[in-house]
Image (cartoon, rainbow, N blue to C red; front, side):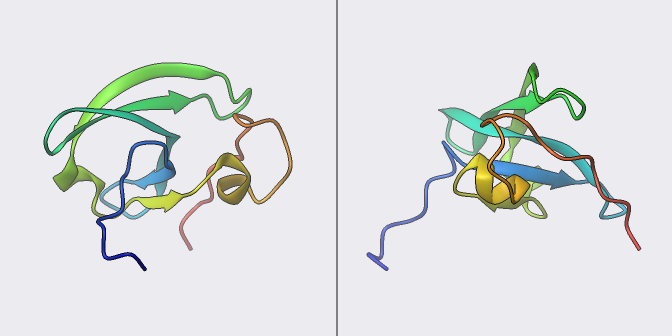
Length: 89
């Protein structure tokens, strides 16, 4: 470890809602203001980009981040072809 803080821009993610179920999948594409992140969301079925949202860091605490799309999907599909959300047990 280099001691430098990890950057979120460029990380793929799955977000979780209040009941810890996967809600969104996407990519952090910018930090327009400190503590606020612009995220690109992807459709579950097609993997196509859908909407972009601004999210405060406080809402991202329970999110799971990945270095790339393959790590997030666990496959070698196209960079934006995501998997269906898993139901909480």
